[in-house]
Structure formats: C-alpha cells, structure tokens
Image (cartoon, rainbow, N blue to C red; front, side, top):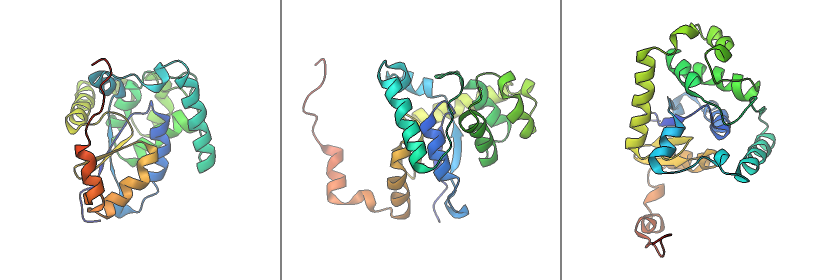
Length: 210
C-alpha cells in the first residue's frame, strides 16, 4: 500500500478490539496498521455515552454475542476474571513496551486468550516480563502522558468508540466494519459515489427530548 499506515485506536478492555486485532495482525506487511492505545472510558465520557457492559441486559447480550463471534471466527476467547475492569495498567504497559504489534498481541493474549486479569501492574507481571518491561515503571510520567495524548488525539480525530480504524480521513468503528475499512483503504473512491455522499446530508427527522 502507498498510503500512510491507518491508525488503530483500541483499548484492552474491549473484547471486540481483541477480535479485530486477530484480523489486523494477519494482514500482509504492506497493509499493517499503527496501534494506538487509548482510554475508552474517557472517549465515552466525552460523548456522554455508556459502554455496553454498563447497561443491564445489554451486558449479558454483548458477552454472549462476542463469544459467539469468536467461536464462528475460530478465535479462542476466554473472559478475564471480571469485566468491566480497569485497563489503565495494561494500556501503560503497552506504551512502555513500545506499542508495537508484539506488545499489543502479548497483552491481548494474556487477557482475552488466557483469560487472565489485566487490571493492575501485579496482574500483568507475566506479560511484562515477556516484553522485557519492569512493571514498576509502567506508571511513569512519560507513559501516563503518552496515554493521555493518545486519547486526546483520538477525540480530536472524532473517535467515539473502540476499536476504530482511521483510514485517511475516514473512521471505521467496530470489528464488524473491518471489511468496509479494508475495501475503502484499497479503493479511495468507495465512499465517494452519489449514494454514499448523500448520506452526509440526510436530514434528521426527530430528536429525542426536543
């Protein structure tokens, strides 16, 4: 590919990000993406939204759905001991380890393939050791600042959820949007036909609470 590598905004909290990562890491080298760890909770707060795991009823449905998707895609998925969990330590570990594909894969494997906790430095001692990172250093000011900057950049780009793949100026949200994102990356004119363009000016017919 000749375009810049798409930025992939993700949080280890999301099982959908884990599923999407399985697709992304299988891409050929010339279609590789740039992982960008961000704090989903900050994204949701900025948009006044709740995560699916914060809504009764939707939580169980989401867990069943993601497990069904994993089974159908041939992906091993084991939930960590508790969910939602605080992913800050995992995100900082990823940054401390360089934020590359190996770091992302190692941490996702620990939490969502092995089903281990990822909510504290102590819980992440194993993947940290495999990545050559002293867990005592993951809370450094530099790592904290990078995570904040990543999250601020995601908000500035218009990200409203994870996983989100930024292909040129377009955002593609969700594991299920992978096919569309790849098609748009390979064909820059995909979203430029008349019907696609008309969607941007579709009138709003009703507003809740208005």
